[in-house]
Image 1 (cartoon, helix red, strand yellow):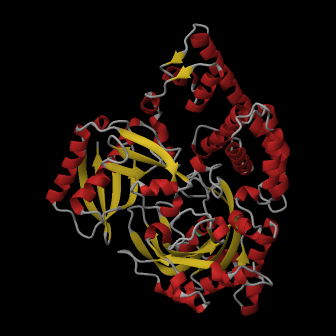
Image 2 (cartoon, helix red, strand yellow):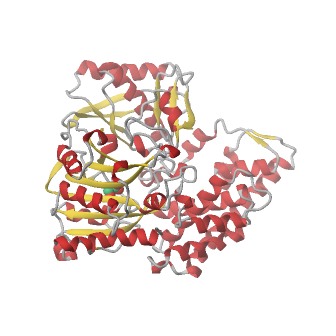
Length: 603
Ligand code: SER
């Protein structure tokens, strides 16, 4: 089944097939990738974003759309996974999400039945085998009980209880961002069989390609998380569902990766046809990354976005420059050829999104940015030749000089050094860059999360302090304590964690002392990148399950990963030694909700 047919079938089920039982939905067009009036969200990251005011009761869906039952295919951008894009088979910057919504209309039972029927029906649905379904449900915690109604709903369509994994909030609680409507969810995991990977007792907890998550078949939005971090019950429950078109296509086209579906294959083929003889050899990851980033950039450009140093424009700049770096340095594709890939992206998408059919405009934006970056590259190369090569210097020990005078990224400096046959020592580079970062960016960067975060020295210190605090809390209060949320500004850290009671003054003092002791011990902070399955074996703390990709980074504090005092899955940034933190002070310990406490602290 082509992706166009999959999208059509999905929407037609809700609009036409369900009309037979007077449950028809209204199809709402995709909203912009840049959300309107959304201070905490840089990009539309799921189908529900445009409906937020309706869930909160601020707007009426019947007045605006003529129904409380809606469906859509939504253009989305996620930047949290940027570092693994190209490596992972299933994560993208841009992707399309199919979804249906009940705004105070039907509930859990119907949501489950609709998704089951659409996935399994052979005439008008996708004809999938229900004996391979593992629908996961929320196991319950201090905030909300086990989702027994959803368990019953799956049983009533014939899924036995032993194939319904009950998972913690890290897996089965969904929220669009730090604030907004949220609640427990149920995700359909599809077992592709032993050819794809080993059997697992609890499917849905790892990235095993055998178990493909194909549909978040219901986020049951019963709460709104407000600015203060509190969960406030909503007057009426709403249902939000989302299924990635790329993943459904993997399954229904029986391929192994999103890049092998018809949404990507022609783009990959085009890039491969351009790869030069001097390519690095390990091209697959780079080709995939280029395909992803060109597609995402194209969709961002038709939103009217230009590359810049601010907010969304900065993401677009990063994407285009990364395309340049991958093409020029890894794939041996001449930078003037990059724009030749754009027509294929347009061709695949223009039937559904006719607004994308603006080749000259999109090419113009790409060309301007590429030319600008090329100039910067040439300037940096001349600088290196003049100051190092001509002077016979063979080792660059202070790359920070190049960064500071040329504004060149670490990747670019490294690529140019290799090109010029010079070795380079980056050991102090990151902390130098961190202290040089423009602080005015911090507010913006915070919203990018992993990989694009604010690297100012203040926030970097507070990131490391957060790891120390987390471990100290576990020592004082016990191993049941774990992270529920974290928010860092250049002024303070804020850490939410599970704990039933208020901490005593003594406990607070003890935690503070432990952190200060670890600062005094001047422990090294190190990062290792490894496959997620191996990373899990190290015992490093991690609480967000599937949100990590195939490869993860672990920061550990101590001499070796085996003996580290603290180890956590984390994207960073961190200081290189705990002594850089100076001292640590807890300024507040308070309740967030039942069973969740919050600490605010400073360095
Ligand atoms: N908002 C939920 C998700 O993105 C369901 O659509 O998974």
